[in-house]
Length: 60
Image (tube, rainbow, N blue to C red; front, side, top):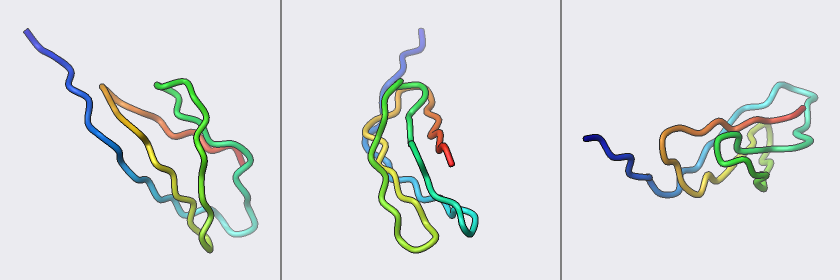
């Protein structure tokens, strides 16, 4: 028998294309919005927990 064990918080950093701006950031598997921080050309997101997988969707 297999059991899924969640992992804890993970930080994700994505380089955005020049001249773009994130309008909305969502975690698709968790089905919730998250706060993101912009630092220069990078966008940082904290994913609180991951069970099987997670997708960070960034609307530009």
